[in-house]
Image: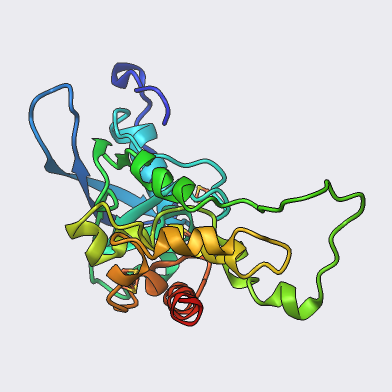
Amino acid sequence: MTAAVDTAKQKPAPVPEGSVMVTVKVARFNPENGEGAYWDSFQVPVLPTDRFLNVLIYIKSYLDGTLTFRRSCAHGVCGSDAMRINNVNRLACKVLMKDLLPKGDKTLTMTVEPIRGLPVEKDLVVDMEPFFDAFRAVKPYLMTSGNEPTREQIQSQADRARFDDTTKCILCACCTTSCPVYWTDGSYFGPAAIVNAHRFIFDSRDEGARERLDILNDVEGVWRCRTTFNCTDACPRGIEVTKAIQEVKRALLFTR
Ligand code: SF4
Ligand code: SF4
Ligand code: FES
């Protein structure tokens, strides 16, 4: 988030050559003005080379400095700009405008809202703490016992491949906040927490699998998943989220 811009000092908004005007409807919410949530609309000149994040930065820089959203890397790595764009969870920096711009005289209207299932703090910013609470609850770190190792722990390529997919998670919350079970009952751990448990449960060097499986066998754990695949579709890292959840379920069934 950056500070609000003094609109009186703003320069006229530039319109780059070759840009196309797009209507962007933004879900706004400011807990300090008592207005509740409402839709705001902006006309933004967009180039095919823009990402959707550029569109938001344009609005904040030239049209309304109070617009609030998170972003950091702008390259799909930090996971901070997850939002619901045209009704689908996406990272704003990975949405390429060239894929959306209309051909000919058609016009484009886009919507952007905060991700669902987490409390909205302001505009597109949600409170991520409940999400990280679930992540921390599955003990997402290597657990070993006994003597401190004096050399690296060797792992075969096949053993490393067992959990390769789930190492790619950037904790953006696109999956968890696209899950209908999470929307209706926020106490469900959610797919991201299970993905990060999977990453260690299937690591041949780890000794905490039993403990994590017991945690996920809980009433709010993996059995709440209804295998709807929303999470897999939403993951910007292409992780097979639902498959990872199924593997954890199977591990529970075969170790009971
Ligand atoms: S597959 Fe399971 S975790 Fe993923 S969105 Fe559906 S119910 Fe939620
Ligand atoms: S599994 Fe994918 S969608 Fe879910 S938090 Fe990790 S990177 Fe984001
Ligand atoms: S800004 Fe870092 S992932 Fe989009």
